[in-house]
Image (cartoon, rainbow, N blue to C red):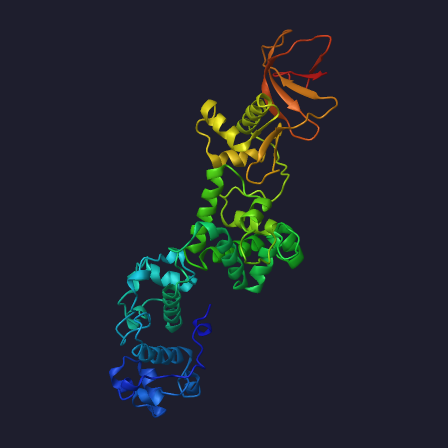
Length: 446
């Protein structure tokens, strides 16, 4: 964002009384600005009092950079009269004055433009304190660093000192409501295009939840371009309040993992029920937004999640969950099932991985009668004919081969169940198929 949006040139210049007699020769100004002020009859700082920066825009050789330099000069003079000690503007042209309380802020966590990011990378600055004492003319020597970039630095320090990036006063009891409030305020600061695409992606403000391809089709853009704009909007939301939003997201993740409970719209609604704040987005859209901002948060915005083909580890965990639920009388709490799994067969299973796999299981289902205590329940078996396909080895063609049993369901894809001994009987008909002479197959119908 242009620095002119932060420091409008139409503001009246106010020079402190004790500085109005200071000659301009003592100020570090460029030759161009010195010529503009000389032609305008400005000899001392007091001649600028009561005037506006844009009053000099009609002078010869006075462009945008010159106006910005004049604006910086006026602000340096104004900061000399401050008594609170918290004004971060340039002091007497020597350099940036940055209080110790904000020196540790990392640039990669702050909302800075690409131009400023390149500048701080060029000078090797990682924190805001690395700019302390650096003069404007030193920074102007670097490539692509002009008065607009210096104005951005000034505004960034002002926001840091005002407490916008302060994360030390985050309260656990109000962390969820604070996070949602900051996200909605941040979305209001996005560009209209980025905000429109992000709302369409998460299904916010009455809009349907669309895929990148559907959004691109409606706006005559490619899927990759829409995905790029949404990713840019999400990155801006993470950094728009400095490290506050990442810390709040981390707190929400720890809250879910400590209770072994996924974040659902119903659970989020309970967390913010006591908050006096009102939100524009629905709880479903908020859960989708949190999932997009941090994929490590176990977010379940939908009740039913149909996965495609599942792997062996997922199916093995599914079978073990089914056994635990059967032993417990048909259902068991998600947290209790996890404690039993890590003590028995899945010692290296993390909570995050467990909750991700839990969305893909098929033999069991997760119910949320109480959003804080989800239950794993046995899924009823579908009635009807089942067809199973067995793949035999080349030398296993006798009446009792060792085969890999692959179960085919009506509403799912093939999945490996176990190794079984298969032989012709009255209840099963075995037929060899000639599609693979080296590894003949048999179809068992029961």
